[in-house]
Image (cartoon, rainbow, N blue to C red):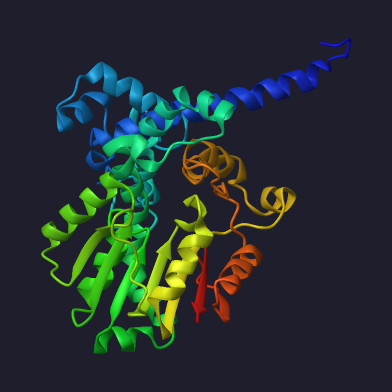
Length: 358
């Protein structure tokens, strides 16, 4: 190794750190399985169970369930009771079992297999510079994004966030046109549409898998004041018709966010409001690492999906997961002709929110 002396203690610590990440990957795979197989839902009552009892509840083979329980207990996700019985705490139920709770997180693990399959394609991206758009992750990828974001949208967007956007709820009650740009599976748009039937809602996205899920969600909910558009063939209108525009967790994923921001400026009414939610981040690597305990995970997510999407077109900007900080967003929206920019403190652990007006 170039003649450098190796410190034995530091070597052990480094190896432990490295294999800790591998252990996290293995446990993440088990979380995905537990979610897909209904194991967490079967543990939601909090009663300690044996592997045989849990296997009977979900109709699976005991030996496989036993090893899964051992992993989850060793990882601290399940509580262990002698002799080899396991339970899910109330907090664990909120995060892993209750899909109506805003803290539900297992949905993010649903997309893990699709994300990891992308690893096989990424060496070519490193060589050519071109990444993968979100449709490269297939239907599973779209479902994972939807299930990861949906609980917060369903629990808090209408009752908790919109009342903090002065003037918007009143406009929605009276009736206005609304656009959600980068709507994904449409959960956020449909939640608002359901709450404000006098308004008209339009979702725009370029992912065919996400748009298919959005339309299926619309039909299932019976909502008639919303429709979805393929932004590649049916872009935003340029007549200033929208009184309210939203973009949730998507600007940093875009190959050309400046172009989309300019389109939003032409589409929004002179007195309209644009609500932006994007990943909370800072101008420098040092700040992101010091102030974000999930920085390593987010930079990894960026390579697997966010930055990859933002580089999926030639000359893509490639902002990445932690690339759209407040100063940059303010500069971009002002360049597009917006004049009012306000950061909103909504107490979200991951996202920053901004109110932007022409």
